[in-house]
Image: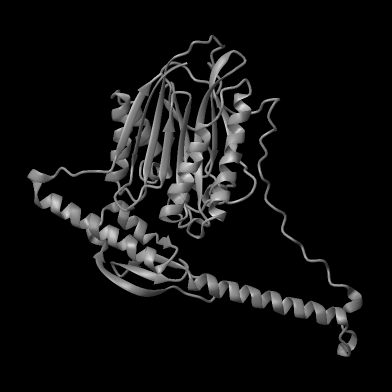
Length: 413
């Protein structure tokens, strides 16, 4: 398969550190989006792509590709167990491998988390991967609409990631390309701000491939740039194998192979259903208490007490940035409240929504959860810095160029 590729990554306009890692060598392409604090996120994403880069060339390449996600998971958990500051770190990972299936060259695309893979085939953009997020699950079950998902306060809560559990439950897809097709791998910093329609328009724009990658980064930054942004574009220039054309059928399918176990999708865990109360334990005539009833009541009181303590602890460590009568403020509590707890304002900043761009203002109105008061204060400081920079640029039109932290690269193979 003859390919050309381009890659770009940028810190964005709000974050101070780029926790994304990207990799491309002509046979393997990967994007990882780290999480777990500045140090932890960088380490986790770097470990993930480094592990993938070590995949040996062998006849069982597809099996090695799948196993590499488990190996990356093991290394991340091992590293976290030896360092207090790295505990809880993890990463998303989306990767594509060039291989051959039944004499036809294909991409195997594997993912865990919410970094995505798209495929531009015959002028139409298709999302290959499925987001492993809480909101993604709600959307697939039909519980919410696309519009509700786009503005849901918990749309970034992951249900799967590397470094979280001992076992890895990734998805693998097989993509059969044609000359002219483009594969896109990206972190959620792109899709948070750029719609699928805008992505398709940029990819179809006819610019050199590297310029298209840079344009995607630029579009995300112009729309807010609230997260790190990473993209890899892989264009198929030609195929060296001769397989049947995919005319009339989808070029993307869930991958299965005899040498590999079938991809197992988790089913929702069954909720524990309490056993019916033993009729013999019912107080007859309100005269006696059996030991079984007493034990049940004690267990129930302990359970209720545990729930109350858990709710209290959760509320004590919950913060979000939101709108307080037009001003950007920090709230203590869970967005929308939790049980009998209602969020309260702990700090009101001098920053007002009317000086923010539409994306930033919308994010504040929909509430931005933060893990601590310090993190919420840092978020507001970054917003102020962005507003100050934009104000300076607007008042100095002759000096409107500014330096970004974008890293780009390209290749042909």
